[in-house]
Image 1: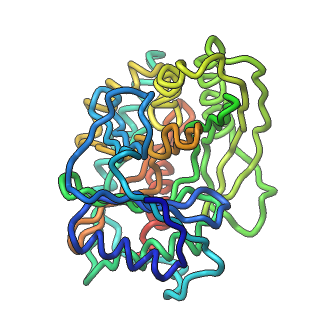
Image 2 (image 1 turned 180 degrees about the vertical axis):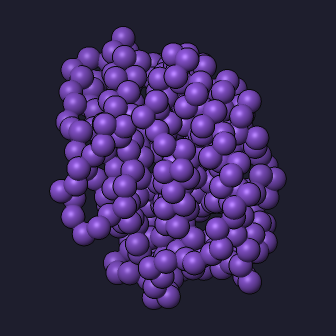
Length: 357
């Protein structure tokens, strides 16, 4: 069933799915006004068998783990147009919490280990992350979603639920890959972070410039044998919520449709969420982060819908269970990194998500 409806009926329908404990996903693409939902009539859990399938894909960070698919053939679809901001309480400018000194000590220690490891010339960059639990009296997930939609208009905003997996939501600034029916490909290299203080005219340090160049070079190297007509634009400063990042846009033409799975596996995980070299950085992450990233820094989005694929990296996200929101945040480590500042960067990123709770 394909159904266009008004926004109130749309939210009533997905609330009905949530209350019935049935799988669904709601999402809005960056700078768009169309909000879309896929929902299943049963709680069946489908995993991806081939990148030729069609539906909404939700992939974990670890590419060897199963990717979940809401198959188009087994889903209903509903969409609506967002004509104005939702009438929900505005987000606060700050979310004041006591700093967890033990968590800080642990993260700073792991970051310093990574810096020391990089200084042995075994890796150029390692992206380290942490998770943080926030207790709330009650989390009204649809109000949180509406706040994200109001405040992060240039992000891919989503709410994903499956009773056998859990509930995830986020507002990610990073596109993994988009491919249209003419096989035109778009991706981006996004790295470097600083707080937005009213202007995009900012100075970037050598550490951020280097980090961003690593990501750009890696993507270009990994797509060149599968594409033609490669072009780049950037790096330039872009705003995501209350943060600024360095971004380079990359466009190309995919040589053939059957290369879709190859190109996705070639760019994921990018150095923006993993590191360089990929295998050494991944090994360091798995041995040192001390937790399972699950779907954080994986990817999600439309797979082969209307002959197009639009996938986004799962950043600025949280997992919600009852009244606990688990936030996932990270940052890129190079030999120019300072461990304390890397902690501060994760605090700034966590604040973006806390403000919508």
